[in-house]
Length: 150
Image (cartoon, rainbow, N blue to C red; front, side):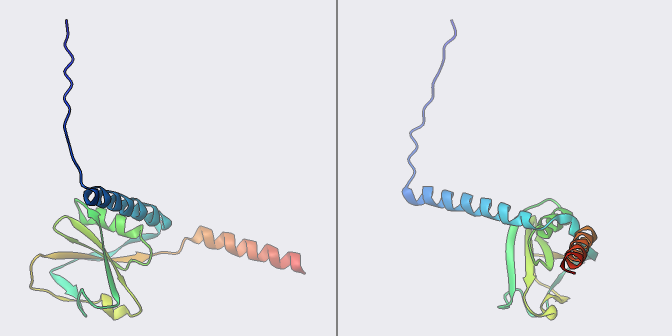
């Protein structure tokens, strides 16, 4: 006769621990939803990856917004994730962590300077392309509206 063994664990979680798990889960799900706003096909890496560089005015400038996106295996994966986020100018990896960079207001904030500090950062510059198909639909719709108004 087979015996069924039931193992129970007496786990006790404090309210702060449960709350932190809830907040982290909520944050991850919010990031996943908001990152779907931009199609990754309209965004790509420009040029070669830049190694051993940092931002011209520093990583902690008030108009530079850096967000941890996730854990990735390659810079290409990081670029794909960063392209799903709105207004991202750069993507970079530090070890296997992927970050998106938004340079608000001034193009020079995203310029690179040599860096001699560890850990080594690898940056990818992103370029967003306008979807021609959506422009054609918009142009056709505006022409139709113009004809109806006459």
